[in-house]
Image 1: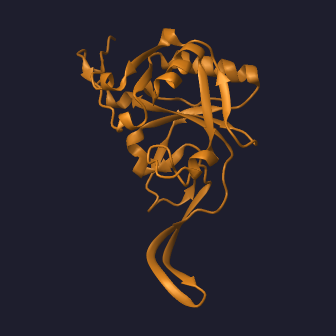
Image 2 (image 1 turned 90 degrees about the vertical axis):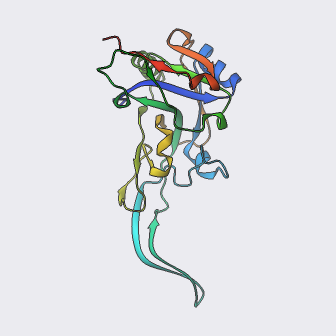
Image 3 (image 1 turned 30 degrees about the vertical axis):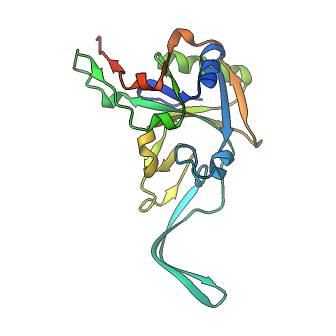
Length: 218
């Protein structure tokens, strides 16, 4: 099932061949949570805590090797070694709350992430409700569960409690992520198709994102 997504546009940034596959075939290649946990040296994709289920705050942590103390931290975080299994597909989401809904003039859109590090092309999903409808139809056909929702960003140095596939550290907040989450018991990638979405999307080069503007008509 799907959760409410209060966004006006979805933007996927990648290399042109992958953008073309999404637009003309509706092909969505979803990596596993484990894949993102194990990535190294990639700030925009890697997250060692992806899929963790809980975070606990620790005070006055001492670290030993044998009888020798090698370190101390007044504050630390513990993530019990439990993970969700499943696959995700990620978008940059333009929050409706960032638009001036009373203005009838063109509004400049500022994409906060360093988008050119993810790829040279972007696909803008223009009709988000219709896109969600097509995703829902596909998963109903597959008889599989899924969710699509905004990611909630938490301060991991202060927060203690449950985590989910839709919670991440606030250090990633600039990604403004909306993700499709598919719970599965199997490891490895998952691919699904919803067909051509050229009618509800627009392909452009990364440099054109800097020219993106919207106008509120009603």
